Image (cartoon, rainbow, N blue to C red; front, side):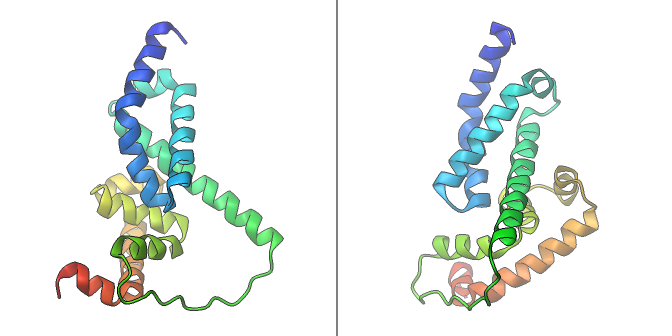
Length: 169
């Protein structure tokens, strides 16, 4: 990598790191996980900077790397966890009536499978089109629509009163 390439990456990393971190936080649900995911994404971008910097939309390229890294890590973690633990019956975790909506939302988002969570975050937080989300996650548009629909039903059911509070009902 040339000094010019290195300077270009450093400039992008300074500007884009915060934006990547926000999306990573919504995906991971924790500051530590988001920091790790952001750093891993930036490391991958640095490793392939010539290809990344040649992309038509560098932010979209970086977001693609971030989401795919998140999904791959979650799959690996889930696979390892399932291989080493015995499944226990899940108990319903009712949140306190006055819980902070943000904490409650993050907890409920954490219950979604990694791809579904990524779809919801990209579609509704990042405000990407169905086509963009499908392209990022390498799936069909109908998969994005159905997964988002099912995930929203699940989120609404789990949020209960917190959802009413957020919508002003």
